[in-house]
Amino acid sequence: MILGHLFGLYTHPKQEWRAIDKEHEGIQGSLSHIMLIALLPPIFAFISSVFIGWRIGVGEPIYLTQGSALGMSVAMYFALIAGVFALAYLTHWMSHTFGSTPTFTQSLELAAYTATPLFMVSIAAIYPQLWFLMLAGLIGVAYSVYLLYTGVPILMHIPEERGFIYSSSIVTCGLVLLVSIIAGSVILWNMGLGPQFSS
Image (cartoon, rainbow, N blue to C red; front, top):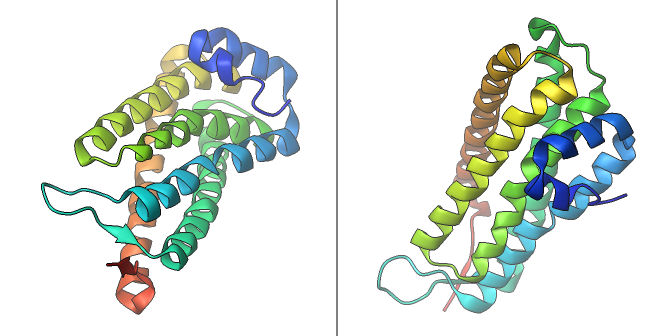
């Protein structure tokens, strides 16, 4: 069931990871989860950038045109989905090094459910103050990392000590992916595909 494990991941994550490990909804279930939950950041980014305005410091709020915000939101949506798949691939690729033999479905489930808090915290964009967004983002990242560290030993069927090192490697890969996405955005902006501001 789509989003079926969402509540459990927040209330009792270890038990929920065990439930995910037993059920294995498959690639279709994981893909449905990713496609639905990845809608949140683009939707809230669009609403805040077009209708509410972003405040940086004490100046006037900054707004984007609807066309520019829509294009950036669509690009963000596909980048988020691609990022989750890339993380799943890297998780699967590294698994043999740590004595695990997961299916790609297990790696995708791990990536999808680990990314969920990070995507859900985008609701904070409704109040687009930089300090508030940074705080919400830190909370989302912290809980995603916690889910990763608790989920790897259970889903990958390895001891917790080895799971800690494996999880740390996944976090490193995730940071490299994030920097790559940011670098790609900067390159696209320099090519003239940056945001258009409304007055």
